[in-house]
Amino acid sequence: MKKILSLILSSVLCASCAACFAGCGSDSGSKTENKGEVNVYNWDEYISDGENDLKNVIEEFEEETGIKVNYTTYSTNEELYNKLKNSNDSYDVVVPSDYMISKLIREKMLLELNFDNIPNYKYINKRFKNLSCDPDGKYTVCYNWGVTAMVYDKTKVKTKPTSWDALWDKNLKGDILMINNSRDAMAIAMQTLGIDPSKCTKADIDKASKKLKEQKPLLKKYVMDQVFNDMEGGQAAIAPYYAGDIAMMMEENSNLDYALPSDGSNLFYDGFCIPTCSKNKENAEAFINFMHKPEIAAENCKYLRYGCPNDEAVKLLPDDIKNSELSFPSDKYLDKCYVFSDVDDDVYAYMQDQFVKIQAD
Image 1: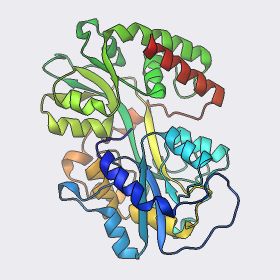
Image 2 (image 1 turned 60 degrees about the vertical axis):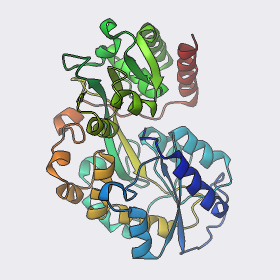
Image 3 (image 1 turned 135 degrees about the vertical axis):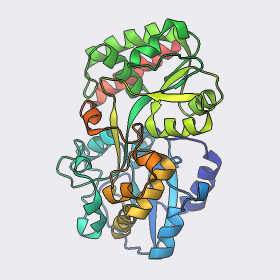
């Protein structure tokens, strides 16, 4: 989901703190008190790290609290899930997306938060509290949110697209990129067919698969992080991707613009959660609270360009960000969007299998 350009840095960080993790596969066992550290497992390139004259928020947290941060990263929700489920590593803060939060709650892999330790929760906009993935609001503090949109090259696409149908435009054959993520790709196809992608069935997947098979001869390739090089370098005409990342691409190439599908899109949330393997719960809550200090949340928003759920932080943003329809679509638009929900394991496995077959054919 996030811009993946710092794999070397991630590797160094992983190596430096691997020795400190132990015991996440089970939700039982004693929680060893260790007030001196917090183990954070986050998406690649998903926190302000001091680039572009912004704050290094981890360093700021360490200086303010005296708590050492052991920071490692992952690239997909499934990678996060597998690590929590099957490894002996221990983490205190994780940042899953909406449908994965639902799954982790269902499998009793998250701890309830003590909001007395997270007073900055008061700054969170009510739209981003009690999310559909955590309706009782016990396990989650929203970190960022965003929508899926299209990025396109104005020199190749002369008319601003209004729907996902643009990704099936035969006039752009060989110049279309498609997102290499089964849930997002299937959802886009479902929307073109009038199917609600929020909680799909196997029959819905079959219909979407047929639509994606029709698209495949038109594609240049399926992409995730490669989308940045191709779109910024003028090597493709159009691609679906995540709004915050599109904003970054547009800063690198003035020929790029964005389009929001008129009938809505995927509205996604990433939330701070504490897994049951945490051994530093109070430090985890201190970290979550710090990330929602308005000035810190604003720094992260300026770096990431995703929507910020913190109302006080939004006030601190420059006008070009807080007034951006891409980063902050209107409530009217968001009301038309859908949110992914947790689907049964067999349905999700079927979706994955069908997507692999489409790519292999």
